[in-house]
Length: 230
Image (tube, rainbow, N blue to C red; front, side, top):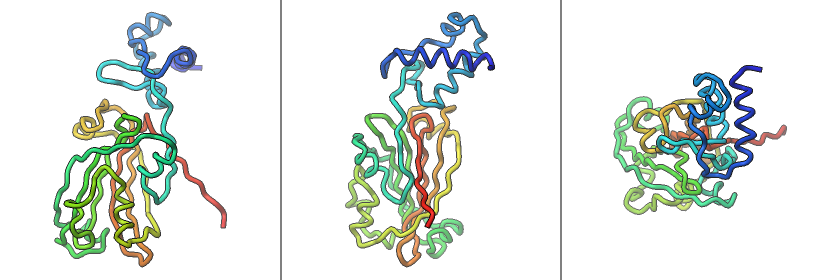
C-alpha cells in the first residue's frame, strides 16, 4: 500500500469520529501527526475531497455532509432533489438573448440567426451551491418566458405547463474543471472536480425543446442510472 493510501485510511478513521462542519486539520498538522511529507498528505486529502468526505470553505477544510445521490433521467433536478427530502433553491445569474450560430441552430433545429433565450442559474441543495445550469431555448417557442417565469422553480415544469411533452433526451457526461468564473459562482476552488452534463431534450415529435449545459460539483454529487433489458 502506498504512503498516501495509509494516511488516507487513518484520516478516514479520524473522520468517522467527527461531525459535519467540524474543522479538518491543516496539511502541515497532518504531516507532523503522521511524520510524512506534505505531498503525501496532499494526495490523501485530494482523495478525501473527491470522495466528498471533506470540503473546502475558503482557506479552511471541514467535514462534509454525505454526497447527494441524483438519479439521472429526463426529469428536473429540482423535482428529484425535493422528492428525496432536500431543500432546493436557485438564484439567477442572468437572462441573455442570443442569435443562434450554425452549431446551435443545427442543435435546436432553427434557422441560423434565430433568436434564442439563454437562462443561467446556480442551484443549491441544503444551502450548498452544487451546480451551474445554462439552458438555451428557441425564443419563438417560449414567448414571455423571461418576463413570466419564476427562476426559482423548475424550468421543466414551466415547459410542460405550455403543453410541451418531454419524450427523449440525449446526454453526454464528462469530467471537467471549472474556469475562474464558474469557480466564483459555485464558491469552490478551481481544482474542484466537476461533472459536465450536456443535454438536448426532444418532444414526442422529435423537435428539440432545449439545449442544456450543467456543471455539477463532483465532490458533492453522485449520479445513478437504472437500466432495464426490454
